[in-house]
Image 1 (tube, rainbow, N blue to C red):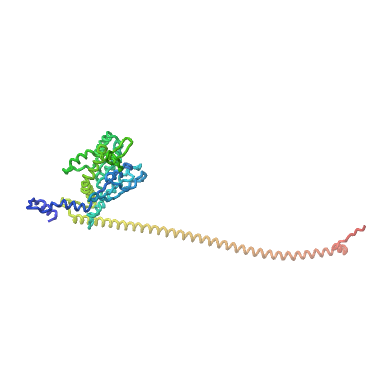
Image 2: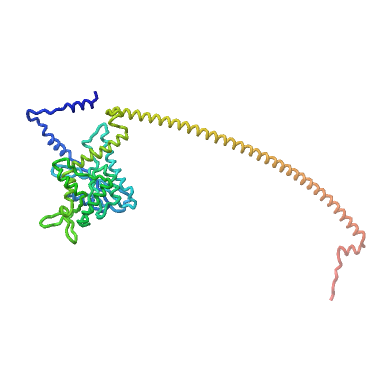
Length: 451
């Protein structure tokens, strides 16, 4: 018999029996209180709003302290989430408070994706808690829960209507976090304008399907006050850490040339209502709603993506082991299928690569043969040209030798004939002239002049 069937039978067979005397389990609430007080509590607040709307000042005012933090500028390139955790102590109750602020929200020219970093941050906290739950050895009792319990959405006091950025952001966040809209710096507009502004905001939220956090009315002890406060949403608040003396009391207020605005005066703003609803009445409900509604929605979607289901196609309950085995078999089947596809793809690519290499090798061989033939033709041409030049050189040398021989012979013959002619000439000269004249011919007569 399955465990679920046994549990169902036990539940159906439960009956009420009277006690004969005091047992002592009526002290369980006290035990839970003592255990919770000893462990402490955690509460995480997300402040969403444009730079300069007084988010840090309101946090200081809400918890009556001064949180350390650097002021944000309007020069951020994108939206960044800055998280700071503080340990607070009131009486014997410890609170680990985490304040997450959106730095640079609404400061960019293109505000289309301003909500994405906020959504990713919230999902990251859900994912971290889910991973801790899925561990074999869980330590949830000591795990620091960083899931966002309340989102204070700061609306600029324009007095007209919500900006498109506000509507888009709240629409993206309403299924992930408890949204409490507040009108920041509400002393910037008059009471009549503030009343109309609240009505306008409420109508725009309803018409656009934005679901804000509604204070619970199922508990009789807080049903009346929560029902009344639901009608005052969104709260118009003012924050101030400056204390001024009003009458005989020191009170948090803001001093203006025209008068003084008291933070804790309900006639001036809704700060007291916000503090009552957020901290003193519904803090535990906000924590419970975060776990039972928003986190469960995220967990269910993630487990369905992983293949886990509550029932099989026959509407029978699914056990975790069966779901795991089914998912494992499905994963192994997909893995084998992908492995086979990859193997086929690898074989196909190897074949294609081999064909490409063979084609390239064939082209290289053809190119080598062409180059080899071209080289042989060039070599043959060069050899023929060299032979022709050698023949011309040899013929030239032969002609040169013959010409030199003829020249030497001609010069010898010409020299002997010249000598012979000279001799004949001299002989003729000696034979044709007288002796005297021959002497004068060789030595001409000197003429002397006497004075």
